Length: 185
Image (cartoon, rainbow, N blue to C red):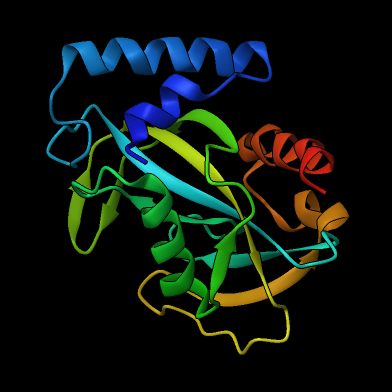
């Protein structure tokens, strides 16, 4: 399903998501290049909240850029199937095969990205228009890092997810993922 259809069908679960959905819809009316990084102000990304079968653990990567344990995800880079982007990024970053527990958007966020150097080039501060998807993986699978992006991959008890993340600004985002999980038991 195209991301615009998913956005049309998504029911925000809190005031933050209501406002972020409103802003994303506004950006879609103003910009025709939000699916690519050609738009240096804002562009679409897809992330994954990967859980084990028992819903007691989540799969995290130690992201080199953020110097923290974090979820998986990446840029749309022209692909309007953001669920496919999330699944592909999860596999590339962890080596794990995943399956969606729900085909629609799990959570919706506009995430600020501060200016940084990536592969020798400066990237200006911008916004990620992020769709998160709920995925499941078998925790017995072998895992692998993606050395150009992360230096570790591991299963973490869900109730310790915030302890592993040193990005304090991501804690409300991650807490929302955890709080919503009981709806998809």
